[in-house]
Length: 312
Length: 319
Image 1 (cartoon, rainbow over the protein chains, first blue to last red):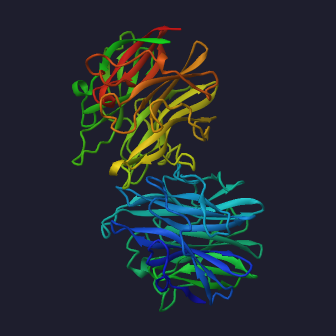
Image 2 (tube, each protein chain N blue to C red):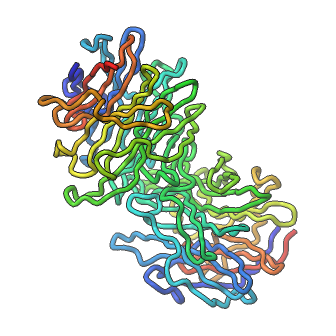
Image 3 (cartoon, rainbow over the protein chains, first blue to last red):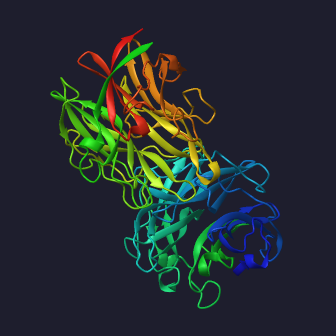
């Protein structure tokens, strides 16, 4: 269906100028709210990611409104989410909406660390309050840093989270800064707050051992679980389309063992246009009997996001 | 009421420290008792880098069991590696708490990393020794106790104990970073977690020790031991800001408990304070209490949070 939202056409809260990254949807009766992370430049010339949303008619052709105020403030001094919230994963849970945030905090020897936070909305997702100042999922013995990109859903009354964790920082002469490697993992919970995880990479690599795997999203269809995610090379991925993000695909019958099968992802970069160099940050959701996928294109979503319909 | 008799300084890194990594500081002493000697672990530091920043490294000295002032061995190299790029303990391992069980020797330590908006963050790691405590290796690159919604940053000062087959970890938990005109300072309070294996921890989730100085009082080094039917905690506390000024740095505090959860603070009973002159004339802190050959001792650091080493006191009386 192509690109449906370009943030540079709108006035966004928190002085945000561009980027609408990692679009994620909540479907209401008469409209669809799509959250995304957009960016402000701070006083040091560095980006701060903020959460915003846009409401669409269910045909996704007409925009009803965009958020005019802060959906969720960044963390206070020293907190894990002081320097940005991106992505922002939303889940309806009876009459509340849960958001699993990825909070960013800048460091010295490497650019930043990230952890997963929880925020809760009691006003249909207009605003969220944090469940504490700290994260619900962060570095552990076997997951030393960059625990982020949570996607949470419920199957059979159990919460499942797919997320990523960093395995190493590698030096990169091209960029003159360490580059990260991260992999997809899985956790479960009965309350959405306390998580059990086994710190194992669950999706096999296809590029090489330093493949970066990000933003898993899972949906059930035809008695099988389907996961989309994005993956790229660890270095030289920002400007080189050959090494940048592509969408990957895996399936599972038991939510535990996954078979990677990118050839059957059914979607690929376009020959030209807004998603011709990369595709990233997929998000699957059900809307009126359809399975839809939001995703970003070139430049990691600087100029917005698009929508595709999944035909299983 | 405790009455401690100071016996003097055991180790001064400026005199006896050797190697690039043992130039200044001998902090947070912690003891393992062997048949013929006593091993005192502590954290030391190389000289600071061009920005004045330190890393801290774990080492030990061995002292004669019959004469704790007779140093018989000083370890040559740091005994616990710093973490690799981007990990929680890349820039320091301090303080450390060593424990010996029937099967093994472990160390719990605070690992330090450096941040942009605040100077540092810390989380608690664990490492194991396969050579009688001479060196330690990690079982993972990440921390064993890390941040939660309620304990968002700066987890430090671990003190590991086992009572009745349960593992207990007392530690400091950061509550707030004060802006302090661009020189942020953390507020941290003493907390506790329990475990059946020392790896998976269940936190109590409450501050254990009432504030005495101010709301933003910093509390650290919660050293717990069982003596004469109750649990005793010697901890360290200071004012939050300008703590390098005389009178605002760490002092020794005291609390007691019968259940390890509810603590009654009673600093009047601490029974140890600063000396009139010398290496511990401004500050006495980071106590470690242990029993050796029927005598109770306390190791403690002195001025400038252990820059000039640590010393020993013995328990004269308790009632």
